[in-house]
Amino acid sequence: MTENNGQFAIETFSLTKIFADWWGRSRVVAVDNLNLKVRNNQVFGLLGPNGSGKTTILKMLLGLLHPTRGRAVVLGGDGKDPKISAQIGFLPEESYLYSYLNARETLDFYGSLFGLNSRVRKSRIDALLDMVGLAGMANRPIGTFSKGMARRIGLAQALINDPKLLILDEPTSGLDPIGTRQIKDLIVELARRGKTILLSSHLLADAEEVCDRVAILYGGLVQREGSVEELLERKDKTQITTNILTDRAMEQIRRIVEKDGGEFEVKPPMQKLESFFIDIVRQAQQAKRPTSGAMNRLEATDAERAAAMSNVLDKLVAAKIEPSEKTEQAEVETVKIRPDDDILGKLTQEPQQITEPVVREKKPETPELPPQQDGIKKDLLNELVKPKGFTERIKKKDKKTEEKKNE
Image (cartoon, rainbow, N blue to C red; front, top):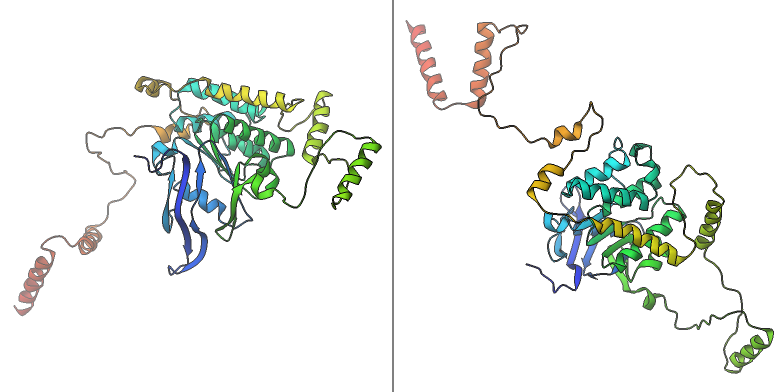
């Protein structure tokens, strides 16, 4: 049974987390009385400096931390419920990946955890590797990846289950400007397709471009919350953008503004450094300059870039999961590290039914204990377990010993 009316993907009610010291005394208030509402199909940003409580909030939503008081409703239920968590994609601040698996094996492993059959996993893995620019490095071990490449594969694993809710903790950390631009394009396209995204970041420029609504945190408290437009709009200035004007038109505008008592300043608009950087890299790619880094082809226009991202996401959702016991049993594969070292296969093997007690034979090289030592050992065990009637037997033994002494 859902606890909301379907409008909100996330709701928190007086959510509070206080970390205690060794003696249980309250010391650090990480999150204080948080009342948050994130609507479906919304990109919501949690902004704030380090230590403001962003990651703690995400962990409580996912059920990784238990709140001191208050509660959270995620997708109409509890984030710890497997049925709810199966609809969530999570990218933590630090990518916790197995260094001995390669990129393809990593995605295959996480896909199998969600119960995806082999056909769906293969289709999505190919599309995701292409999307994050690691298609040419699919067979390289994760341990040889740079931080930026690890973030890329971490984002891919967060999308392997085609989640309804995507929770991203510092998603652009460690990425170069090209990767950052592509992550932001991906977030916009996912929101356009109806996904809900909760984004935690301290990079304000990134959040400004993709978020519909933001909450600014400090000391565990929400200082301000609202849409990006209403928070950033300046009421004391007016901005006019137009094509290049003639000197005569500029003079006329100046006279009108000064006559009305206003100030007048004319200067050419500035291009963002990110856009300038991407233009330079695009030119280098068109000249076919070689590179050893992650390879991402940059489209010439925003429309082409959006179309390319949409095409990748189409491939992700093209294969549908068919819930079938036969499919689950026959097609779910085990990720193998090496042919002679199938560690994950051993971990996932079902335990065998034990029908008869296991008889352990004594090793021939192990000498038996002398009777006296064996007796001492048994007495010590008796003292430890104290079987029923132990005290009475000791009293009878002491009485017999005393009678022999008297004789």
